[in-house]
Structures are given as structure tokens and as C-alpha cells.
Length: 160
Image (cartoon, rainbow, N blue to C red; front, side, top):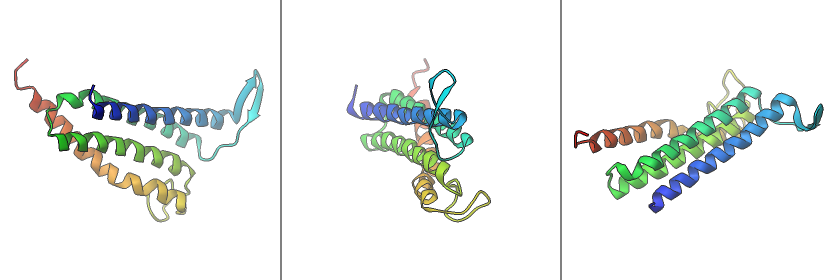
């Protein structure tokens, strides 16, 4: 296994790990804490909303799986070394920036969907931290998916 593939796989796993922590936050949000004994809940306050934790959990798992999928196909894309590196690190950046967006957006008044105030709430530093890294990713992920899809279709020239 090549180094770039290992790095991509590792980041995919770490993004999923953070998503699992969001699953704990979801559980704490739903139950009010952690059940230490049947019927006995140790209160654990959490920030954000239950819906936000659902998104952080499922979105994080989905983004991690996307990175794992890219790592799997990376050696089969026949890309130049520079383009292969761009694709691998690009998807890693996208996954982490969306992870930051989910977590900080859940704590932000405006849900990190805009730099300024919006109908969901007022802007704050958490919203800016969640929004800025994710903004280029919404465009970058489209370009990366096009590169990978084109390379996959181009790779099948044998007819089999």
C-alpha cells in the first residue's frame, strides 16, 4: 500500500472516530446524560441541538466513508503524481472542514451557514470558525468528484 493511500485511509478513520464522538453527544442530548445504572442518568450538559448532533454524527460518518472510498480507488485512477496528491489531500481537507463545520455550526447562533446574521441567529466567532474552512470545500468537493469520476471512466479502456 502506498503512503498516500495510507494517509488518506488514516484520515478517513479519524473523521469517522470524531463522528462517533458526535454520536455520544447525540445520546447525551437525547437522554440528558449518561446512564450509569438502569434508570440513573448522570447529567451531562451538551451544547447545540439534537438535530445538529444527528447531522454531525451521520455527516461525519458519511464524509469519513467518502475518504475511505477515495483511498481505495486512488491507486486505480492513473493520475499524475501531482493530481493524485491533490485528490487525496483535497478529500482529506473536505472531510475535516465539514467536520469542523458540523461541530462549530451546532454551537453557533447562525449555525455557521453565513458569515453574518441569518434567520437562524446572530453571527459569532464559532459561526465564523465553522463557516470559513467549509466554504471552499463546497466547491472543492465537486471538482474532486469530477476528477475521480473522469479518471475512473477513462481507466476502463480494455472493455472488460
